Image 1: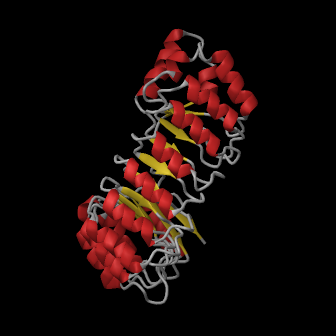
Image 2: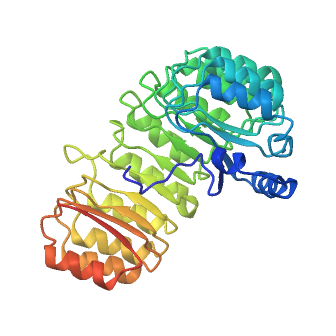
Image 3: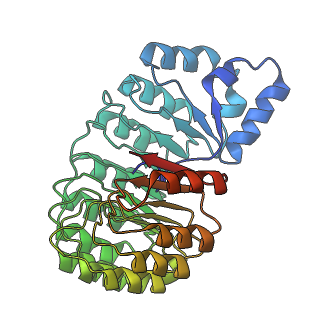
Length: 365
């Protein structure tokens, strides 16, 4: 999403494997242990494989015990790590207090890894399996093994409605549910979320083509707890859904509506009503909503003074006056993305960059 709505499964602080390997004293280890315990993640190299992972755990576990035994341990294998089930088996037995693990794009792990984790890591609260080659069985394994799970991302995995229902039924504390690009998910999962997902505050369903307008509308009408909603390229989103989002009110801080506009399915008055109802929005993606008028952008700037990041790519009707209003009224802005905004001159863009140097203005011509 071009960085406007950031990852909801992440940590601000991190300790790298390189940092850990440089430690020469117990004082250094304790410093890293305290960082881990305060929420920092242990970031492992993108190129790490079983040879490195298993070797490190076998040879250095006792030395790194102060770090790896922390109650708040967060292991981040980053994208495209080459580890397989063998490394996860080691981790599950040596790090039973593991709280969070990011296995995004670790394409060589299978459902067996989840069986290992479920057998030993009963305190796991956060799990990122997005873009992993796991099967529909995975959610049943997760539901059975991780009753304390609070945050899960299975984006672009083969997930079924039955699996989502089982997950929501067993994991009562679930707060973040990432199902982006899960093409098999339908209204059935939304109904499960309405009845069982009472604590879900972050919902990511980007790229869904099956969920209907009525299902989305029923979901947001039924709950006002949502903190972040990601609806990028969801075919069922229209003005009725935007109206139902008004029910979320000031709890809503992140909203991704990128690419949902088509064939006049959303009107300016729908968005104006949304901005008036949800005044605490901080991150907003409106890319390719070409119908948006200057008056709508001004309404946003008048209502949502907490706005920090916005993508206006492809919003062809916004002009320099409305964009100026946005910068003047939204003093907390740190990121603005502009592309194909035909009424905004290059001279005006340069003036914005010069005048608002504290804002990262990304302009793509």
